[in-house]
Length: 303
Image 1 (cartoon, helix red, strand yellow):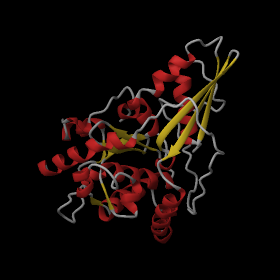
Image 2 (cartoon, rainbow, N blue to C red; image 1 turned 180 degrees about the horizontal axis):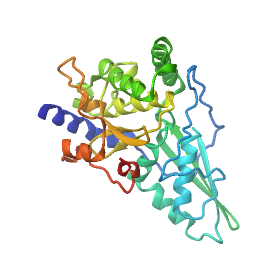
Image 3 (cartoon, rainbow, N blue to C red; image 1 turned 45 degrees about the horizontal axis):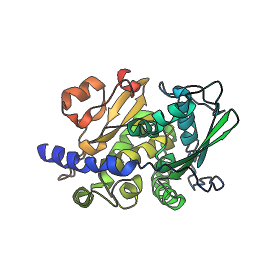
C-alpha cells in the first residue's frame, strides 16, 4: 500500500504540469468550428445533459458577472465548441475584462470547469482575443482539444465492441459502473515509464484504452468516457497530486478511484475505493492525495 501511494504521488505531480497550458494572445487566426463525429453507436453525444450544482448553461454567452463567465465557458466546453465567444455590454459591466482575467488566469478554476465536461471536450490549450467596439466587448476563446478525432474513434471502437457484445440494455446502472471499474483495472497497466519521464504518453484515456498504460489521469478519463456512454452522471475530482471520479448512483454522489483499486502487482481487483462516501474516503486516506475543495466540488457534500 505504501509503495502504491508513493508511485501515485510521484506520477500525478506531472498531471498538473501537462493538463493545463494557457497562452495569451491578442491576435489569432480564427478557423471554422470543428464538429467531432465519432463512430460510436451506443451514445455518440459528447455533451453532458446533467444538471450540476456549481455550473449551469449560459447558452446566449452574455456575461454580466464572474458566474456568467464561468457558466459560459462551461457551456462552450460541454458543447464541444472550438470557439467560445463571450459578449458583454462594456458600459453597463465595467469590470467585464477584469472579471474575465480573474477566471481565465485561475488555472485551478479552469481545470475544475474542465473536470465537469466529457474528456473528449477537454482542452490542451486555450488562446483568446478581445475586441472592443464602442460599448460592446467580445472575448473570443479559441479551444485546442486534448483529443483528436482519430484518437476518439480508436477509443470508441474498442469500448463499443465490449458494450455491444455484452448487452448492457438490461443491466442496472450499478452493474454498469462495476463493469467499468473492473474493465479499466483489468485492461490498464500503471505506466511506470510515464512516472519516470513525467512527460509524453500515459496521461490520457487514449493511452489507457488503446495503449493499455496510463497514470491516474488516464484511468480517470477512461472511466468518465465509459460512464458518459452509459449516460451515468459523473465528474472528475483533482488536486495537484491526483485525480479520480465521482459517480451519481441511486441519487447519491460516490467516489470511485480505479487507480488506487489497481493492486498493480496482482491480478486481484480491490474495491477499497469503489462507491464510497466522502467520509469513507477521508477515513481511508487522510493524506493530501485525496484532498479537494468541497466548495468547488459541491457534489462531495451530497452523500
